[in-house]
Amino acid sequence: MKFSKSGSGLPSFQITPMMDVVFLLLCFFVTTSVYSQWESEINIQLPTADAATSPEQRLPGEIIINLNRDGVIQVNQRVLTLEELGEKCLILAKNFPGQPVVLRADKATPYEHILNVMNTCAKSDIWNISFATEMTDGAAESDANEPPPATVQN
Image (cartoon, rainbow, N blue to C red):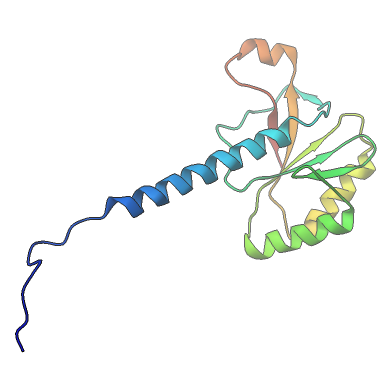
Protein backbone atom coordinates (compact mmCIF):
# COMPACT_ATOMS: atom_id res chain seq x y z
CA MET A 1 0.00 0.00 0.00
CA LYS A 2 1.18 3.40 -0.90
CA PHE A 3 0.37 6.36 1.35
CA SER A 4 0.75 9.89 0.13
CA LYS A 5 2.13 12.65 2.32
CA SER A 6 -0.20 15.50 1.54
CA GLY A 7 -0.31 18.38 4.01
CA SER A 8 3.16 17.99 5.40
CA GLY A 9 3.20 21.69 6.39
CA LEU A 10 2.90 23.13 9.89
CA PRO A 11 -0.48 22.99 11.64
CA SER A 12 -2.43 26.24 11.33
CA PHE A 13 -4.37 28.13 13.96
CA GLN A 14 -8.13 28.29 13.35
CA ILE A 15 -9.34 31.75 14.34
CA THR A 16 -13.04 31.30 13.51
CA PRO A 17 -13.90 29.17 16.60
CA MET A 18 -11.96 31.62 18.78
CA MET A 19 -13.99 34.54 17.40
CA ASP A 20 -17.21 32.63 18.07
CA VAL A 21 -16.26 32.11 21.71
CA VAL A 22 -15.28 35.78 22.17
CA PHE A 23 -18.54 36.92 20.58
CA LEU A 24 -20.59 34.68 22.90
CA LEU A 25 -18.72 35.99 25.94
CA LEU A 26 -19.36 39.55 24.81
CA CYS A 27 -23.08 38.82 24.43
CA PHE A 28 -23.17 37.26 27.91
CA PHE A 29 -21.52 40.23 29.63
CA VAL A 30 -23.64 42.81 27.80
CA THR A 31 -26.81 40.94 28.73
CA THR A 32 -25.90 40.62 32.41
CA SER A 33 -24.95 44.30 32.65
CA VAL A 34 -28.35 45.30 31.24
CA TYR A 35 -30.19 43.17 33.80
CA SER A 36 -28.14 44.52 36.69
CA GLN A 37 -28.92 48.07 35.53
CA TRP A 38 -32.66 47.27 35.50
CA GLU A 39 -32.42 45.99 39.07
CA SER A 40 -31.01 49.29 40.29
CA GLU A 41 -33.63 51.32 38.42
CA ILE A 42 -36.64 49.92 40.30
CA ASN A 43 -38.52 52.80 41.88
CA ILE A 44 -37.32 52.60 45.47
CA GLN A 45 -36.57 55.68 47.55
CA LEU A 46 -33.27 54.75 49.19
CA PRO A 47 -32.20 56.16 52.57
CA THR A 48 -29.33 58.63 52.61
CA ALA A 49 -25.97 58.20 54.32
CA ASP A 50 -23.09 60.61 54.89
CA ALA A 51 -20.43 57.92 55.29
CA ALA A 52 -21.46 55.80 52.31
CA THR A 53 -18.80 54.73 49.85
CA SER A 54 -19.49 54.09 46.22
CA PRO A 55 -18.04 50.77 45.07
CA GLU A 56 -15.29 50.95 42.46
CA GLN A 57 -17.11 48.37 40.40
CA ARG A 58 -19.81 45.81 40.95
CA LEU A 59 -18.79 42.37 42.08
CA PRO A 60 -19.33 39.56 39.58
CA GLY A 61 -22.48 37.61 40.31
CA GLU A 62 -23.76 40.22 42.76
CA ILE A 63 -27.45 39.64 43.55
CA ILE A 64 -29.70 42.68 44.13
CA ILE A 65 -32.68 42.18 46.45
CA ASN A 66 -35.21 45.02 46.19
CA LEU A 67 -37.56 45.54 49.13
CA ASN A 68 -40.32 48.13 48.88
CA ARG A 69 -42.16 49.84 51.72
CA ASP A 70 -44.93 47.20 51.73
CA GLY A 71 -42.43 44.38 52.26
CA VAL A 72 -42.64 43.08 48.68
CA ILE A 73 -39.38 41.37 47.68
CA GLN A 74 -38.15 41.53 44.07
CA VAL A 75 -35.18 39.74 42.55
CA ASN A 76 -34.55 39.85 38.79
CA GLN A 77 -37.87 41.63 38.19
CA ARG A 78 -39.76 38.78 39.91
CA VAL A 79 -41.79 39.12 43.10
CA LEU A 80 -40.79 36.49 45.67
CA THR A 81 -42.06 35.40 49.07
CA LEU A 82 -39.63 34.92 51.96
CA GLU A 83 -39.78 31.14 51.43
CA GLU A 84 -38.96 31.46 47.72
CA LEU A 85 -36.13 33.88 48.53
CA GLY A 86 -34.79 31.37 51.07
CA GLU A 87 -34.84 28.57 48.50
CA LYS A 88 -32.99 30.71 45.95
CA CYS A 89 -30.47 31.80 48.58
CA LEU A 90 -29.83 28.18 49.60
CA ILE A 91 -29.06 27.27 46.00
CA LEU A 92 -26.79 30.31 45.64
CA ALA A 93 -24.90 29.60 48.85
CA LYS A 94 -24.46 25.95 47.90
CA ASN A 95 -23.17 26.70 44.39
CA PHE A 96 -21.34 29.98 45.10
CA PRO A 97 -19.98 30.27 48.67
CA GLY A 98 -19.43 33.90 49.69
CA GLN A 99 -22.07 35.13 47.24
CA PRO A 100 -22.38 38.96 47.48
CA VAL A 101 -25.88 40.38 47.98
CA VAL A 102 -27.02 44.02 47.83
CA LEU A 103 -30.17 44.87 49.77
CA ARG A 104 -32.01 47.89 48.31
CA ALA A 105 -34.75 48.74 50.80
CA ASP A 106 -37.06 51.74 50.56
CA LYS A 107 -36.42 54.26 53.32
CA ALA A 108 -40.04 53.91 54.49
CA THR A 109 -39.74 50.12 54.84
CA PRO A 110 -40.41 48.94 58.38
CA TYR A 111 -37.34 47.44 60.03
CA GLU A 112 -39.24 44.17 60.48
CA HIS A 113 -39.24 43.52 56.71
CA ILE A 114 -35.51 44.26 56.43
CA LEU A 115 -34.79 41.96 59.36
CA ASN A 116 -36.88 39.17 57.77
CA VAL A 117 -34.84 39.37 54.54
CA MET A 118 -31.55 39.45 56.49
CA ASN A 119 -32.62 36.44 58.58
CA THR A 120 -33.60 34.56 55.43
CA CYS A 121 -30.17 35.24 53.92
CA ALA A 122 -28.43 34.24 57.17
CA LYS A 123 -30.38 30.96 57.39
CA SER A 124 -29.26 30.24 53.83
CA ASP A 125 -25.60 30.86 54.79
CA ILE A 126 -25.29 34.15 52.89
CA TRP A 127 -23.35 36.65 54.98
CA ASN A 128 -21.84 39.01 52.38
CA ILE A 129 -24.63 41.63 52.47
CA SER A 130 -24.33 45.29 51.49
CA PHE A 131 -26.98 47.96 51.91
CA ALA A 132 -27.68 50.39 49.09
CA THR A 133 -28.07 54.05 50.05
CA GLU A 134 -28.07 57.39 48.32
CA MET A 135 -25.45 59.98 49.11
CA THR A 136 -26.58 63.12 50.89
CA ASP A 137 -26.43 66.41 49.00
CA GLY A 138 -23.31 67.54 50.86
CA ALA A 139 -21.45 64.33 50.09
CA ALA A 140 -22.54 64.41 46.45
CA GLU A 141 -21.30 67.98 46.00
CA SER A 142 -17.91 67.20 47.50
CA ASP A 143 -17.30 64.28 45.18
CA ALA A 144 -19.37 64.72 42.03
CA ASN A 145 -17.52 61.95 40.16
CA GLU A 146 -19.07 59.14 42.20
CA PRO A 147 -22.54 58.13 40.93
CA PRO A 148 -25.25 57.10 43.39
CA PRO A 149 -26.39 54.68 44.69
CA ALA A 150 -23.62 53.92 47.15
CA THR A 151 -23.38 50.88 49.35
CA VAL A 152 -22.46 50.51 52.98
CA GLN A 153 -20.67 47.22 53.62
CA ASN A 154 -21.89 45.03 56.45
